[in-house]
Image (tube, rainbow, N blue to C red; front, side, top):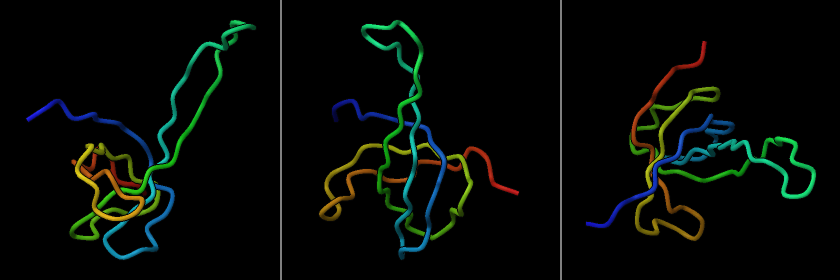
Length: 82
């Protein structure tokens, strides 16, 4: 198989069944002003066993389209929230 992208982020919502919303933050340099800026993007990821909760840090893996907006699945839970 081809190489799949892997991203790390925090779960900001787990209200859907078998789906979580993961916020992935990246830090990039602004092209003109050269200041480092935090950018974030939200991804919907498949959570088969509903094991994740809000605040958990997870690794998500790119996969085939599972629904209209889901193209990622939860690979592993790196850190559970308190």
